[in-house]
Structure formats: C-alpha cells, structure tokens
Image (spheres, helix red, strand yellow):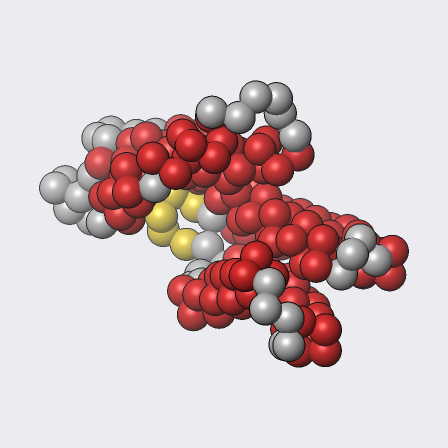
Length: 200
C-alpha cells in the first residue's frame, strides 16, 4: 500500500518537479536536498519488498536488509527535517541564534539516534517462520528502544513548528505576502502530519 501511494504521488507531482527542478540549470543545496529526499524512498522500495516477500532468506541477509532499511529511512527523515529547518531559518532572516539552535538540535539528534540504533540492532534476532507459507524475514525478538527514535524526530520537528508559528504570529500575521503565507501554512501542516503519522 505504501509503495502504491509513493508511486501515485510521484506521478501526480512529476510535472511540477520537471518544471521547477529539472528545467533549472545548476545545483544548489535546495535541489540536492529535494532530490535526495524525493528518491531515497524509491531506493527503499526494492529492499523492503525483498525482505518481505523473498523466500529462504538467511539470518545474515535479513540483518543486513534491516540495517539498510532503517538507516535509509532515518536518513530520509533527517533530510526532510533539514529542508524544513532551512525554511524556518530563512523565515527568520538567517538569524544566527536560530542557526545555533538548529545545530545543537541536529547534533543531539544524530548522537541520540546513533545510540538508539546501536541498542536496537544488537537486540534483533531472526529465525525460521512458524509456517512455511510465511515469506521474507521473520523477526523473533527485538527491544522497543526504536520507539525512542520517533520521539527524537518529533522533538526536532516540534522545534521547527514552534519557530515557524512564533515567527508567523509575531511578524507575518499582517503580511499579505503569499509566499510567506504558503511557507508558514505548508511548514505547519507538514509537521502536524508527521506528528500524526509516526509510529514505531
């Protein structure tokens, strides 16, 4: 279902992507972030499908697949957070205090996530499925520490949401600028959507 939604979303936005990304020459940080964030999920699809439906996978292969999938997902989420963090930073007119806040949050995010992943991966064990009709990797046990990574992501996005809303309320609420209004609205709804959809 997730794969179908990603493919459907891709073709719905393909025309805008060609117009605003690929028809513009040169590469900047915005374009690089967009391409990585947009296409990493498509790299994940074959790994996810293979780990779910392939038959007779050994334990080592399953462990490698899990590592690849979790790390790529975390990387894609981090890139998305960086993109919206840069948006908030721009809304604050590149305020150095905001930049310092984001740098501190980013360092804490990476350090805590790395610790969580190390604890999670060492706890995961795979084994034979109870029924031969069950395909893919069959996970026998794993601790629930991975849930903490979602808490870290939510905290990071809460910082972004708070900065966007505070800036919008204090400085832009009487501004008729459509770009500012769209940046505020889209940034807010993105973070709200992420809060409501994250699950371990």
